[in-house]
Image (cartoon, rainbow, N blue to C red; front, top):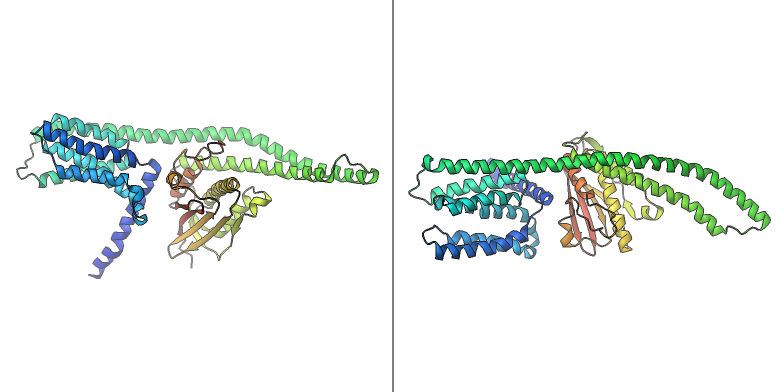
Length: 444
C-alpha cells in the first residue's frame, strides 16, 4: 500500500508534468492555431449536424459528440480568459482537442456510417489537415490516440459489432497508404528544414570568415594607431602649451582619444555578434552537444560578463552577486552563448526604453540549478511573449537589427544538453528568463 500511495502521489503527478512540458515544447517550436481551429470548430460541427440531420436522415449522427467538439473549440477561442493556473495546460488541452475533434470524431463517424463515401473523403482529408496543426512526431501521437479511441468507442457503442475483413481491408489499405504518404512528406519537411539550417550555417561560416579577416586587421591597426597617436597627442600638447596653439581644443583631443576606444568596442561587438550567430547555427544543426560536464555556474556567468563587449555605461547596468560555488551539468560554452544573447537583447530594450538595469542570480535545490536573468526596462506584451522562442520572430523590424533566431537557437542549444529556458514577463515592469540545469552529483 505505501508503494501504491507513492505511485499515486509522486509518480503520476511527475509523469503528467513531464508530459505537459514535452507538449509545451512541441507547441512552442511548431506553433498552434488556437483561434483558427476554434472558429472552424464552432462553425463546422453545429452546421454539418443540421445538414446531415435534415438532408440525409439515413446517416448516423451524434448531437452529443458534435456539441462536445463545439464546446472544446469554444474554450480555445476563450483561452485569454482562462485562469492563470490553467493557462500552463493550454498546449495539453490543444492536443486533447485535436485528438477528439479530428481523428477520434471523424473515424468514429466513419465506422458508424459503414464507411460511406462522404465520411471516407472527410476522414482522408483530416489526415492531411492534421499535418498543418502539429509537427510529425506529434502527428503520429495525436492520430494514433484518436484512431485507437475511435475504434474502442465504436466497439463499445455497437452491440451488433462484427469485423468483416473482406469489407474493411480495402479501406484499411487506403488509409494506411495515406498515413504513410503524409508521414513521409512531414518527415521530409523536417529534414528539409534542418538542411536549410545547415546550409545557412555553412554560408554564415563563409561570410564570417570574409568579415572577420578585415575586422582583425582593423583591430590590429587601431591598437597600433592608438600607441603612436597618443605619443603624437602628447607632443602636440607640449607644443600647444609652449606656442599658445588652440587649433585642437582640449575637448576635441579628449573626444579623439575616446573615439579609438569606441571603434575598438564596435569591432569587438561585431566579432562577438558573428561568433554568437555561428554558435547558434552550430547547435541548431547538430543533434547533440559536444561535451557535457560539471562546471561552476558562477564562474561561467562571470566569464560571460567579462567577455561581452560592453561600453562603460552598459557594464554599470549589469548586477551579478557571486554566490557560493554551484556545480551544474552542461556545457559552459552554451551558457555563455545564451547569456550573450540575453545581454544583447536586454541592452537593446534598455536603450529603447531609456531606463532599466539587468540582474543575474543563481538559486538551487537538491536536483536543479536555476539561473535567473532579469531586466526591468519595459517587459514583453502577452501578444509577443508566446512567440519569442519561435524562429524568425522579432520585434525589431524597424531597425532590422535582428533576424529573430537568437532565442530560438538558445532554446535548441539548451535542449541539446537537457536544460530548459522559460520566460516570464509583466508588461511595463520586467522580463525574466529562467534557465534550469541539472545539478552535478558532487554538489553539497
